[in-house]
Amino acid sequence: METTGIIILAAGASKRLGTPKQQLPFQHKSLLQNVVHTAQQSGPMPVVVVLGAFATQIKQQLPTEKVHTVVNPHWPTGMGSSIKAGLQHLLQLQPNTSSALLLLCDQPHISTTLLQDLYALKKSSGKGLIAASYGDTIGTPVLFDKKFFPQLLSLSGQEGAKKILLQHAGQVATRHFPEGAIDIDTNSDYEALLNNTGQ
Image (tube, rainbow, N blue to C red; front, side, top):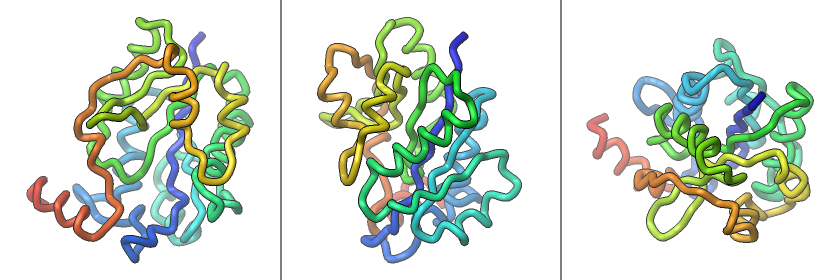
């Protein structure tokens, strides 16, 4: 029985933006609420949100959402520690998890169709790593088979999951997601998003 869990990484301090990106309004919700809603709509599976900077105020935005939150006390060291914290929490909730989907809260164009396509591609391809492709790169959202959990749990500091994708290129299948190149790091990124979506 395939059991997938979702980990949403939302621990960063948004230093380049100057305000918590997790809380930026987009399509009548915050960026984080949008990706949580999308994750929940993609199937009946546990959703873990990893918080760090501004954890208390961000958590207050999620009381009505059926999500599990975990605060990563080591978030300043980088994304690796947040991936580890999220996966550890997911495995406590669902020890028989067979794959984990990593999402970022600042990719506003993630859709339920995209996530369902990633699940389907894992089954049809037989590959253990299913990643989105955009521009000339691959990255999040990315689905990891449980055989890669030890490597995810060994990440530290600034190391992200992309390191694992590059180390195991023969195990990667990709789904084209050109909008994945759009993420929100600066005020100009956010203004462009609002302008392009008629917000």
